[in-house]
Length: 513
Image (cartoon, rainbow, N blue to C red; front, side, top):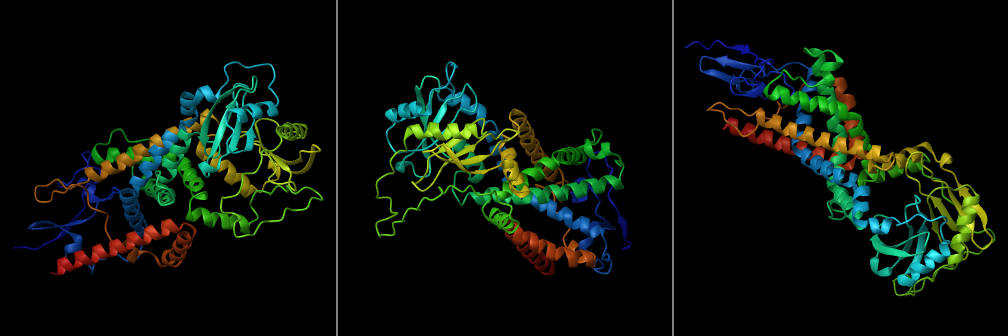
């Protein structure tokens, strides 16, 4: 029987997305993988004994093949983390409206009066209703319809606080909530769900995996899709930005997956970068960068001129939580500090924090997170009303500003409702991209009777052996540096490589046997 063989490429323009029962030749990039046809039927090129002799030389096309494999495995293995991050982030986006729905009776006043009552009177009302703990700070109302927040430090609550909400016009106590850095219980719960799935420090690994791989996946997808468009029919911007509605099967799904990803790319890269700034391991690396570049926010000097610093208690009984709570500051000093800050030009909502000891000044800080932001701070000697120190938002280093604004944008507060709408659309779009990605994996499954499978095969292995030498020389150090900057990315990538090598070795052993 004749053993004449020839390469028969599968038709990548097949509108049904199938060829010999295997959509798109089992290649996620849409390029047909050559198959060998013999008298007995098609066989895989990797199984032909002469495949080693026909192995292509080093070429730049191998870079694309390597990206295809990386994008495929990142999509399959990391996409569940991204999906959870997208859905929990979507829920967190609506926390301002949910807070008003659940806690509106405490957050809002029934009737706006002519002028607010003095802070001392509002604090006295709050302390009469809730005498536990000490006053940690007072937050003035952001809007005329909002209540004043008297924040109490209560030892039983640990790192959380009890916030008492007071009508600024009548000094009537509207209620209280257990808060965390000013967040309501619902916002705190959704924030923890998004950051760590309410699993504590261990759960933070999930969000760091998602943030680390999100940027890699987006950039890899952009290179593959835009590079593919240049070599095929869709050479125009329309072909890269809009899905192909004439396509069918896996090609139609791919076009929606890729085009949507292009539209979301900038927003997803922004979320990846800002999410990493306060992650556990990459965030620590970012902190080192800020220190090295002098990019941290300027510190406010709260030491009173001429005052003697308090002597620290180093006895064996100090610092074990058994001592008495610090007494409340004089409520009248809150009004003095606020008046001095207003006279110094601090407008909008501010946080008034009493001095921790007699040698320190009070702190009054602007807390306006909506653009244009206001983050000026002053140190006030409450006894004299004198401003002893001040920091201006305009004087913050560029890295400090970018970090602060990035966090506020990530949280959906920088541009108010518009910021929320954009984040919600991005979260929904990312969810759709992930679903389409898994649908492509299913659509690419072999469907012939003798080669059925639940999902499509992974892209070809061994592309790194055909990479050009300049790519290897520059790429390996770059990957090592990236793995150092993003430790979770580096560890998971190394894990993928180890698993891939083990799987490849097992398959070769089976073929040999």
